[in-house]
Length: 446
Image (cartoon, rainbow, N blue to C red; front, top):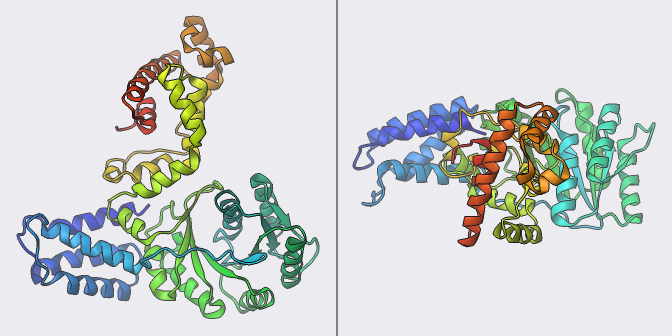
């Protein structure tokens, strides 16, 4: 996420290295590079210029404290300006109402249907709500089928009306249905087109007028760059929506939409999509995003993800097992599953301050633990419970069953035993470090 922009901004601050104070000349040189970095990230020329002019005004005349270098001061000013550009404060989604009605709008292919399901999953899991998904795209049968599949996957009911071509009627009936079934959030997915046209705009406007939603969210594909911002403005001029959702922010995106959409439409970014999994939805915090762009990590979000994924009671039980040296492969498998729930491994490690640069050229796919899981699943219940019984013949059987070389099985068992000893020592010292354990098991940088 934003790797290219982060790298270019880091290079621009090097202009100030070795300078004892900030001057108009070295500030101009630095901001010239900052402006180039923003333009390369698909930020419009006007916004990039306004941004650097604002930074210049804040920087000139600043007294550099003894403990702060000019480069550090410039990073602080750019950080604050980036945060301001993206909206300063996080704004919550409005889910007040009986039921609360949320309308989802956007172009076809922007990720509306997937986001609708992710939002339902988020509201159900994190907010304790009982959502209803509404299949309001009456032109694309695949959208209805997709929503039904996703709804079943997350355990959320999907309202459809077979054969109907009336999105207004479908939305109204869905709201009545939700009231009768005591469902307290209605999420209405709508039709999109490949490009903005009058028919689509009229239709989504009519749906909004008919159901008066408590929240209207515009979903946009961040990989389309500055076009995403232009599309966001066109929709806002007709719908006056309440917030923006940026999807595919984990892809090969230059970040221009995330940086500038707020200043163009004056509406907050509320969520960002960072993968295909139903849990791959993040609340957008401008300050945390500025931290990540400038290579400072995002430890708060990492801790929140860990808290959401790890069960406190299970953690206590695990701690007791570790203290008694009873941690086994079943426990390890559970830990892998919980870490996978947190999201992409590379993205998670990028949230650790200082790690983004270290891992930028490393490849971590979503199946980073696939080989380990295959080996563990090839063990018998008794072997998982007590790894000490795994002798040579058992190791050969496990290797054949998992499609691995016996050396891989030996390596895993050896590292597991070393890790178990380390965890016990840490437990006795009153601490724990599951991430370090995972790094050792996968050979990640510690």
